[in-house]
Image (tube, rainbow, N blue to C red):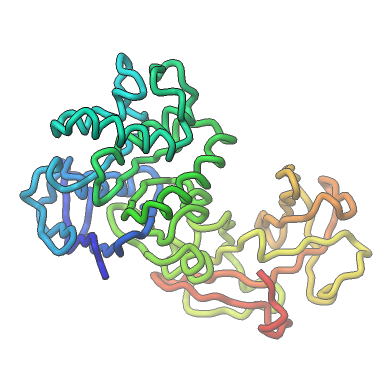
Length: 353
């Protein structure tokens, strides 16, 4: 059952139409990502749910109640900001306790709640430190605890990992997922990082130019993009303009553009014994990027620079080398439609993503 709903929401900032007929439904206890490029309208949606911005039209419903005219402070919202927004001259303890003191909660209950949250975020013993004495990951955990202190109904997070270095960000993704699952609190977070959204969220809402392009589980969006924007935005897709020139792909619809992901392509050295050698095409390697456990091979085929993944444990491929490329499948776009096309030399059951 939907716990947070946005019905036909529109929002303008002067002449800029930031939200265009937004319709969103979020189930209770779910962790939902608002994913999109900069300027796509995702933060505006978050701020309207929080009551920090007011829609020009439409309804915002929380737990069955229209809250358009309800102040943000009375909506039961916990908000975690991108830059933490911790009070510099307050200790960790006082930062977490701040919202409880505003509500005039008795001090013994505040102490009990702060101690509980310090244990939850694994920051025991840090309560007397100031934000400047904490690491970025610790500051984000404290901001999380401060937002949770008043027992909000909904937790909103605005790019919560943007200010943290890459390694800590990966650790905090797992931690956030575990905490929200444990607390069973309805949560919405904004991100432009698709890996982050796919790894953490139960559901992803993709925004673009003020509209909702598509929503669904990470697997649904990844495997079944419904619009050209989602097809190119989700996954490290490469656009090609003449897909019908590729061997064993028939034209669909009126469009000539397609998107190919690296996992849709296999690259082989000449002479390698491979299953689909007769269906592969020759391409010339123009770039090789080391990705840790794999290499991203960029090779030119029919005028298009195609990306493919290859294990570092396989025989070495060099820039300038002529290789065989086999494309398993691709997404064809025609106006507002997306078609998944499979190499016709394969039976469907042979295709592995």
